Image (cartoon, rainbow, N blue to C red; front, side, top):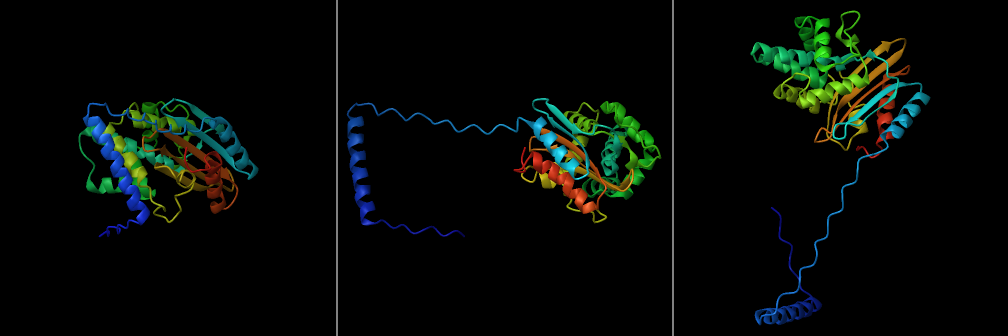
Length: 296
């Protein structure tokens, strides 16, 4: 229980209190004699909220340049869904998206459930949640096989208009190819419903991403990129990582929705021939370079 603070009036405070009461009595007498009260003081407008970063192009170029000096190949796309402004920096070519492909697996699974008018079984719902929150590979393998493998990516890419997204060359979902621009487009259309997934099912995906765990089920750290880079924002993210693509490169992907109103979407990918911890730091530092206060 909170204790009420003691009240203590000094002699000066008592004198001032008496003067205030006397003045108030005089004002009351004047008003009651027919004189109008003095006009109220004009309201003071609250200061406007600071505008979001307006020079995203410049800071994005700076971020990719800093990463390049560390030997990293960075691809970055940021969308402001309120204004429609999109900026991209770095290598815009398609690359394997690792566990970010689980977004497509989840989307296809949920739409199939709607079309069949059968809800997910408790086991499938649990698998969906751990797949998205903690990047569990086992339910991903199961859903991928049941959905027809490469056909999963083909269906999702067609519904969302992802022109640079293609099924994996070897049938393994983690080698699905895409670009940061396509991934940002996917999130945008997932949120506004134009990708074909109903709102209730889209919310299931976003809510799971908002509950992303600090580590994957395999113990791998999942806070790199967006979560640690935009630490002052509410985020909903899907991360991806793997070694060794095109040589000894560690591949890291950080994608998701930023802000309580889902105003921003970011997708960033990095390939770097270093150890995994250094590679995670590089992709996080790229976003910290853009948003040093941890907020867009």
